[in-house]
Length: 286
Image (cartoon, rainbow, N blue to C red; front, side, top):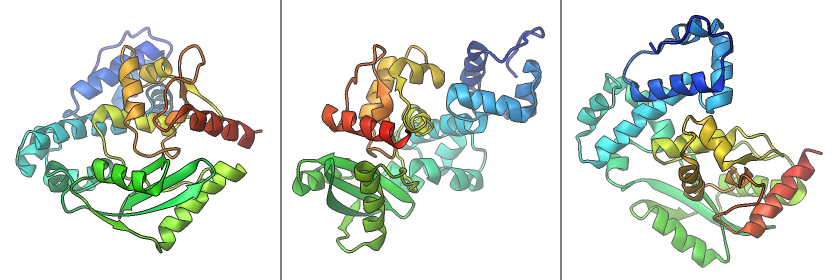
């Protein structure tokens, strides 16, 4: 367990960041919540709330993300699936097959092979902010991007998932409903739909994207705020890169991250769209 002063009276951010770093570094070890909370004089539930508020992930989610990061690295390096599972600290195949799909977004072998064999259904529609393509696996939305035309978005989907089987679903009731719900949020200020997501990224990207999903509607954070919250205060530039790598517009709200001086900063789908999204969300919360 990480050592903390017995006289520590407050669960301050620096101490929590130190705990988060220790968990991430030693992700293969057990981290009972009660043991983490005890040095701070907090109940396990109170500690978890405070930890999650500062880091953006619960202790268990952070540990899982760190393990999955190791797992992905081992798979990309060519390790056999079983060996990679053990190298990542999961201890058994039964545990990882219960946990990994929610973050890898596909089977372990498919991830190692570049998503070959993955089936992705997609559709494209015009919205208030231009053409929008949405694609989903059986687990949820893996791609939602704006573009100038349907052909450009089709090409972008192929670049993102070159080895997957991509099926255009012009009549998909589910995709139609999801796109309509998202467009209603964009055009009529109705609440953002809570759609299932199938996110695929590095451990660091997953930490950033999860934190972004927790930014309340109508609020913004700076890149430095995000870096601090996920326990990587010096990684402001890397946070910006992770935001730029986001494949799921609006549903993973990277548009809510601004520069430290309040300027818009960058946005993968154009600053006019970012400005429009922030204006819509400000109106929704009034």
